Length: 215
Image 1 (cartoon, rainbow, N blue to C red):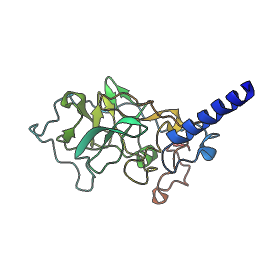
Image 2 (image 1 turned 90 degrees about the vertical axis):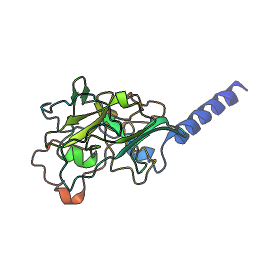
Image 3 (image 1 turned 180 degrees about the vertical axis):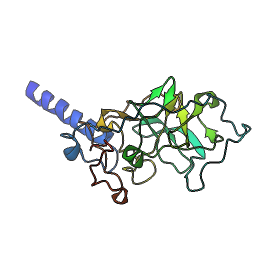
């Protein structure tokens, strides 16, 4: 009888792990994955004050015309994951453990930034469910401005194929869904250490010529 109880407990734990994984998550491919390494450039980014990002805030210098801006930050709760922040299109945003929040600095550049596109801003995002005293920006090495939450630069993940997915959760043991207060959301962690998807094919990802991005 005791043996049956142990079997039920193990089966329940396996169901819980499966239920926690995001849609389309393949645990078999991720359990033996190696941690992700990124091109960790010297933190030369200059820091913008953590000013209010309310609609009344003055507009910053116009970003380049070909830059996709994150026009809205939405803090909300979703099934299984709990508290998250999305952009205006519903894409879940992430933070990176190799960045810093005090002072804010992004260390995801080059091919890393192709896999994890930074949430760029003109300094005037619309906020819903995210306190304006938590939102700021940091100037990246290329001169664009990236949104920060509690000082942490935030990103999208190209491995998410539709809004609401969080396939970037715990990738490399360094990328995590960000909460509206800027903290890591650790509510739902996949088994093993997922590996990041490759940079887009047209980025020259087969060239090992020194970006330092490994997957």
